[in-house]
Image 1 (spheres, helix red, strand yellow):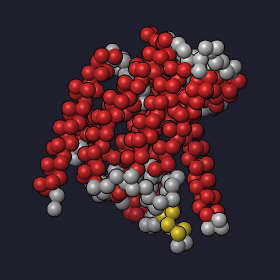
Image 2 (tube, helix red, strand yellow):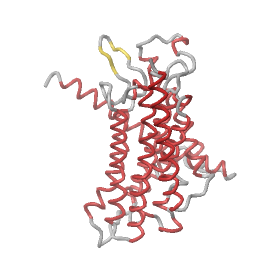
Image 3 (cartoon, rainbow, N blue to C red):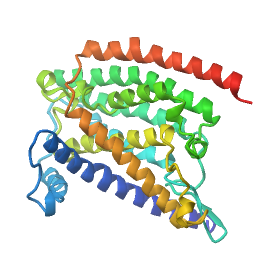
Length: 350
């Protein structure tokens, strides 16, 4: 037990840090950024009343949600109605357990990984794909348990949409795995040092992954499960208070996760065109790892901006167009990309 105590403390501290980051950055800052960017696109001001530059507006919204009454329909299945937002939020948070944020550093003689986990998880990609598959249960349970036809249609749409685009996303990731020769995100990023970014070798795979990420996170133009003009509010119609907020917290956490995965898989992760050691940061030190984390975060924010930009620029698809794109366009292109990558790696790799 005395040997396990330091490990438990380390995991607890890291978990607290990650949860705080996800809550503050992915949720609060994500909502603020979305409202500010949408206001900029539509030539408005956006939130500017609560706090300097409106920075405290997301926290005011959270307090309002906590104070709202939690209503459960009389005919709803109360157990699944309560557990649905917990599943969505739990899955969104759990994915961060295997995402590396920088190279490991040394504290004395101990090697510390700059992530929520202590060892390097050698099946990180597989874990992420598995957890995102479970995330659909939260939305499906929410739609079914509400005993509302509009909510049920939203849940069914989400199930079909996420299953369809998971195939394309998985196939596009396999191309990166073949090039890196590993399922470990740490190794995939390390293989992209010195400008060997996978975007140069997998441009088609990147486009497929990006489009699939929009569909997986239910972001516009793929927000069919909650389309207001057809389904009132979709799967979350019968939710109120903080349960309603938990679904949107999960959406923004997933948006940050997708953006970070795009950076890790295709844009070199924490690598820059030049080595950060050039700035005087020594290898294996905390400050080098922290600088790499800042680089990863900056790249991630670029794609978060793209997610928001697309939402406020492109109208949503019809549902038949959404299914057509997933099954008849992205999946065949993903398989073609996989075949080409396999042949190239087989014949050219020594």
